[in-house]
Image (cartoon, rainbow, N blue to C red; front, side, top):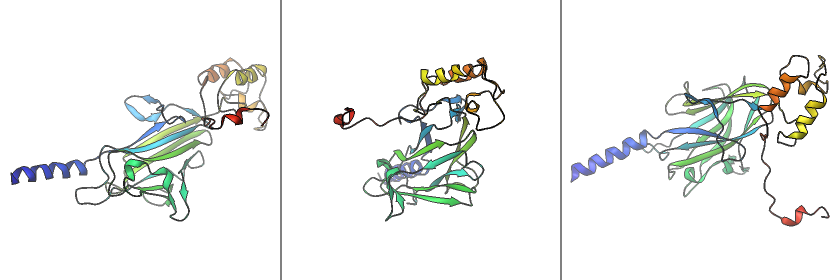
Length: 257
């Protein structure tokens, strides 16, 4: 019987030590996963428009405590080279604790609080992000949630580190590419209104001045608004950059109020 207890304890310790931590990327609705370019490269995602908000959820298939009772700790980091193109934001900042309480989900903060703190990094990478640490009662599930915003065209990588495993090699790197927005009127969704604006300028020659009103419509950057831009526009038809929150007070829908 004693041998059985030892075997069970060893299996428990092994399972705790091998718990996997990963990040899932969702659209702004926090339900729809962002598609990858290739299933064989699941952390290289399809292009998103500038202005798009994504939701990043860090989860685990085990508790955040190792067999030696050492808490898991890691970081979600954007390098200095990329932070002008994409931003990472925590939720529910607690000024007193200097902690983003709203970014710690139930599985990471069961019977207590988890640590989510902003940090400027010089190691493992020069950049900024958040130190993450579940509490001792954490369990398998979604641990932390963050908002990601595509600010400017170009590429942006977000790296997830396990500080116990390595300061040099991330567990995974989420790779995003931002393309010019098709949401020309800024209402957070690509619709007929945006198509009408693009069609009204079809045939227009775009000047070199970035302030030219037609410049945002030249999606293929060939100096002219043409069928190539309409084709590029159609790839994002009905796509949202952000999701409006449902109205909780029905009286607010009345135009007289």
